[in-house]
Length: 476
Image (cartoon, rainbow, N blue to C red; front, side, top):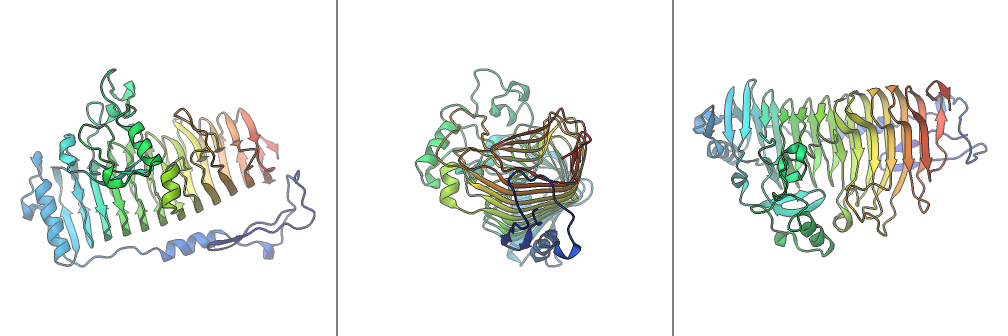
């Protein structure tokens, strides 16, 4: 039989005892003294995250000339309020009730941008408003591009909080058509992101290790900006606000540390509208949030292909708890931009339910991405319905051609416990590993899946360890 994993943070030891066989599929009951709660590590991660605090000083954007009529450009007023707050030692920049049009907002250290109830921040539909270009990222590759709508670069102690709404105003008439899909407003013959001067050019720059300052995009190109992007920042708080109508990824902390996302609502159904994408980031808590998205609800990333391997910063120590996932390609996803690896991910006490939710837990990579995924713990999850699978692990992921390379991914230590699924979709469990590197150590404990058309489809994986688990009423 197989013991449960014994965990101390950063170190995982898995012991095999008492007659292990590769074909073993069940475990005898354990004595309580033999069981260690791996989620105590999640508690330690949460307790150790530095949540920013701010001086008790308020700076209303109205005092800097803001006009809440939905048409006046308030970019300069908001900028002046943030600069004053930052220069005077920090505090809260207040956006009161009303509709405020603006261009990009650049946060500074020790500033909490606070939206009062009834505040709506409307972002300009004019792409030129997001110039000059800044150091940012697109699908796991750094570049100089349009500014994210809310951006912070190398700042410390920053926040966006309150009960208001950030409306990116992206739609089928602006930003979204650049994805190249007719359902998002693309017209055949118009420029789009797959044209040679866009993504293919950026991919080549990745392969050739072109310096980021020379990866110039922006005006004349069709690569959409993220909504909220703290880049190389520390001590970040996003609390209570709502994001809607995003051009691209919604929350994208990259190369950042100590990130708290609490009580946030994402309702955005555009192309690539991932809810939250921590990338090259560590010590992250995503809690009490609602995700209703056009792509993955949460997607943990760590760079694409050669760039990810050069940067070599794994995303790690990530806790997702008490969240609700509605529409989306996946509830909690790892990949596909994953070349630097992901480890120590904890998902607990979440509800996932929508006829438009494709998977609950998903890991996706290929041999161009490579990378590793290890130590993923999922507990106390209720799934109403998913389209494809409850757990999907795919090392052959591809939406573009030529996704085979020389970097064999490694996936191990994936554990689901106390998961209840009413409608499992096409598959209960769907795993496609590699002959060269089979998926290792997947366990299902107290998992009960109903309504899966195909209970299991497993290729190139060590045998799954089932403990008190049923699929379609059958014991495994």
